[in-house]
Image 1 (cartoon, rainbow, N blue to C red):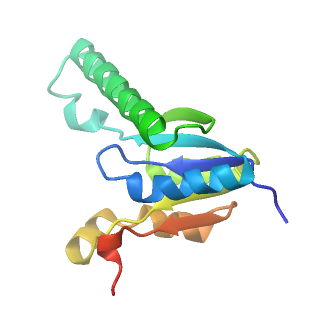
Image 2 (cartoon, rainbow, N blue to C red):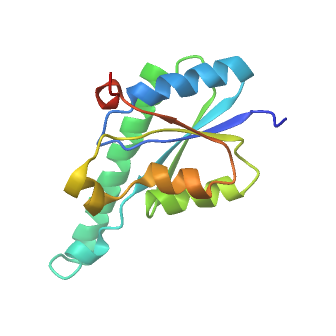
Length: 151
């Protein structure tokens, strides 16, 4: 059986993460493991590089990076107290970055949330969790928020 020493926890700072971060903390406590919070920063260059100067683009990128770091540090402080937490910001598509990171032997498990998207919203945005489940080299624990559970 694999040992669990490093848990990858992908978060979206624009969404609620508390419902699955608590499970990551439980797992980390149970196995005396470290947690790496990952936020995949979107690639937005194609949306604004025609209309804005390079200087303004760099300012926007830096402000976005600092805001993401603040949010990740807040999650670490408020929800993962007492756990060894590392923060990673990477730029790209979330599912691609998560899968790339699970291909290495650095992470023993992924704990992530699945959002309640249905219908057109699900078709438009797809499911990061579904792709990770199907292709991950590491075990994946998916947590559904309470409002998605059918009683």
